[in-house]
Length: 300
Image 1 (cartoon, helix red, strand yellow):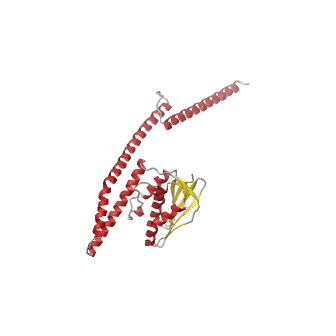
Image 2: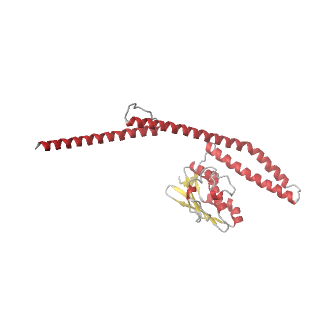
């Protein structure tokens, strides 16, 4: 071999060695980054490199990010706890005055009053009942969030649950000329009858409330592999896509529904009740084409 060939061979060998070294360094850096992320996920991350390498600088940045995230999470958790405590306190303190208000309004409405005053007493009674409903919703939300109430699911037929939800809203639907019906269903699922009826009732109530006169609301169930899916389908105005991820949040009111009565707690309570039983709720909707809310109840 000529001298030039030897030089080229040496350069090729050096290039290959350098490439292997770079590959090994990159793999080692990836492993170290993976180990850092594993420690961060486990909550035990701490800096252990104090030098001038890029990996040490990255460790310092990750440590600052995690400390900032922990402080922000602690602040948010404290604020949420304060809000929950305030709601629970207000709910507890207002129950007795509201009960007294309803009692005296009822006695006043039953008295011998002129027609105009009788209408005023009945209006007072209606507003008191509305306020009582709102307070009860706040109490339920507070008790579910604090763990005072824990649903106890047991296997049982689903059809009575559907019939109860339809029966509760039958008068409101008839008053609005909305067709409300439940399809027959022979399957079973595991759920707490009282609290699941509350969840489904909230969804059916919303469907009837937002479906215009002449529309329809249908409640039916389908058996899946691991869940029993209960669908509440309406012919209402539908929900914009940008709002569908928000409607299950506490106190959220959609842009097109803020003129209607309500606190924005019904769907939130439904989501919490189902989650505590191992289930969940989803919505499928397009503006102008109605909505279908699907409640998933575990089969076992």
